[in-house]
Image 1 (tube, one colour):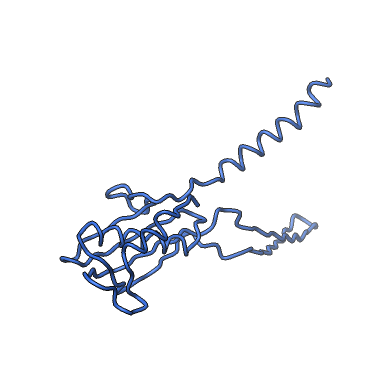
Image 2 (image 1 turned 90 degrees about the vertical axis):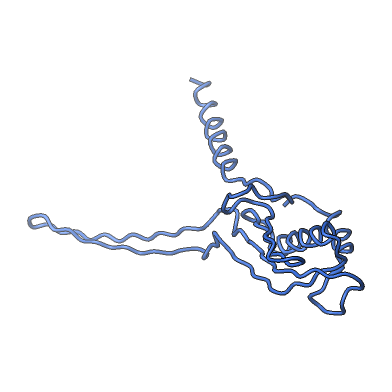
Length: 173
């Protein structure tokens, strides 16, 4: 009988641990997204014309928005250097969010019933909270590459500096 009493809390603890482990997400790492996979974590690019690309980085749930933006800039810098350019300018940018929580929810419900000479009324109250990992951000950049000195423009980036600052400091999120 003592073994059964001891086993119940251990089984409950193990079950709770499994539930929490199932909620964990894989970290967002800097890598290429699987070709043709929609919503796959990682970067992808599309060549619009010579010296012009659309670069997208899709983050995983819970990854910070600024880290996803940095990873998109890093991929643009890598492409510029690969193609023999020195700098790039962001001509257009957009961010999309999926899986965003709208916060706690509260609901109230009621009902009544009559059977013969008896009647009853019931009232229910409920709340819910999103305990998920958070929203998933995706950043898309349209970039134009150039050679020579980097223009003095807030949307222009020296490709080597971006790789040095963001590329070497990469971390899992």
